Image (cartoon, rainbow over all chains, first blue to last red):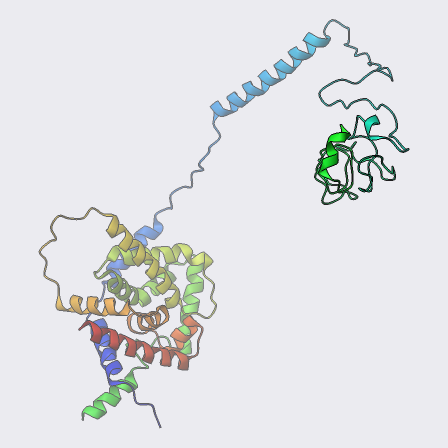
Length: 194
Length: 195
């Protein structure tokens, strides 16, 4: 059993054949003669976009010579009198204070280690902290290390995540900005700290 | 009577207007030998290839451009001559290679004609009936999918056999026959819509 073709497709097939058969046949020999003449014609020479030019070479040579001359002149100007410039090492005294825009404040001593009254503390940011929050600011237990000396505001592995005192020395959950208390203090006592 | 004519046409579909050069192995071997000689610079061998394929190329160019264009036909063979060094015989017929070049040349010619300055008035030239029929068929074929359009052009314009089209499109001859039927049916539908 063979598949019967679609009559419409067969009609299109015949239409195509008629159209193709009606096309004129080209003059083969004349076409070949014209083409053969083109085959013999040489291809256009390939011209590089940037040909080496004498002017560019001269300009590069002059620039190189000027650079060398400048270097030689600079060497003669500095060392031509026979005395080599000697830079003396600068000795800095051990105890001399370091000044400058990035200098830190001098270290004044170890932090307080014992119980300290609030009125004794004037550097609440650098003194020991870690109050238990139940002493109402009367004294510190002195068991925690100070974090106020860090002062750079960056997080450290031991920092309290709730610490908002900007590195001024308090670790508890309070916001006295370096007032010296550590616990969750009562705000009514904050005035007695200063 | 009508039925027998119909069946005769259907039987002839698989051997479309080919001059019988592609199916026989001798013709294929002869063409390969000509191509090999032409690659070595033998102009006579290239001339033989030209004489064998210029009719198909001229048909394709005329069908694509809607007019005869001897310069475009010459350009196809000129590019083929210059590109022969890169041609590799992978079993695809030489005509299929020329078909690819002809398509590019036709596209370039159409672009060049678009770039030319448009006329204020078209010349008063009467369009031949055959040209009008070709334009109708061309516009309808352009609506087909690429694969179906290639099958139609290779079979009817270039004059390839099913086996040659199959080699060119990397398919079996049976598959090409089926594609041809589908393409003809789709073309019939497009033509009916347009009429």
